[in-house]
Image 1 (cartoon, helix red, strand yellow):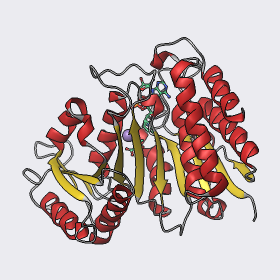
Image 2: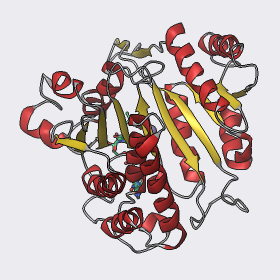
Image 3: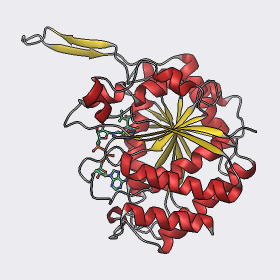
Image 4: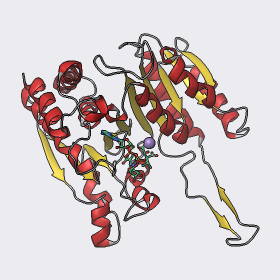
Length: 360
Ligand code: NAD
Ligand code: IPM
Ligand code: MN
């Protein structure tokens, strides 16, 4: 049993502040449960690297990462120096595509002790997953601006959905739902307005559903679905969505649980043909960078998801995952709080509190 090989890529902004806390929690958990990990630290996939080299990553980035078991990723983006589409298409979006991380798994959960912006909600009332398609869809480079600078100026950008791409995402969503008590999938659709691709998605969902007779399928247009995230969050269990719809829902959902600073994600290659990537849902937050006040929980929880994926939900890795989650719950209940949670604690104080709890 060789150690797990983990690539550590902090990236930009608060990615560099929350990463040490993610590692602190992983160290505490792996030590306690006897899990061996070898870290390799990379300074590229960052706008600092871009400033020095004129690109986000070295040309052999894929060879350097290919042999890793997983990537632990902070956040990328520093729009003051590098345009966002350049930094993101040069790093994160490349990883997702080239490592075929076709599921972006994003849990949304209300914790005890965290003030909920929705009136009258308690833990248990908000507890679902956004299962976001992560390699195709609205995110493309297909198109262009035409007749630029003239009266006829126009822009076209295509969306691309493949049958394989949609069905493998839906299959993951149905399987996840099957493992949960409520066994319920909501498909985010827009088949009334986006009249070609969205009715097609509806049909893909109907087809995949046939293999899961015990799982209910509910299709909701993205507009009303968004309203229900706010008004009736208890309706949701597993929400399957295209790339862009899933992106929006996975900031909205966590916002209803108090702060996006809690929200983790797994960019999964479920077939394990390439490493998967684990990162907070949030970005590099230039507006708070440098103050050591970013909430590190999203990073820490992402680390727990990584261990659980590496251990296939079993054994010491599962125990380590559960211990990290229990520590997060305990600290959110009555530990130090960063400003987004209504407190005055620092990133480091919150991270240390979680690590102490894991170790005990
Ligand atoms: P953002 O998520 O970085 O920040 C949005 C708001 O949430 C800000 O006010 C920020 O201070 C706050 N916030 C975010 N994370 C927080 C945390 N852990 N604790 C406390 N507050 C937190 O989104 P943005 O401002 O749209 O983007 C900033 C940069 O990050 C851009 O370059 C963007 O492209 C990039 N980005 C990267 C990723 C990623 O790497 N996965 C995700 C989103 C945005
Ligand atoms: C996310 C981010 C990225 C996305 C951006 C930074 C390209 O918002 O991981 O949610 O849209 O996927
Ligand atoms: Mn996003």
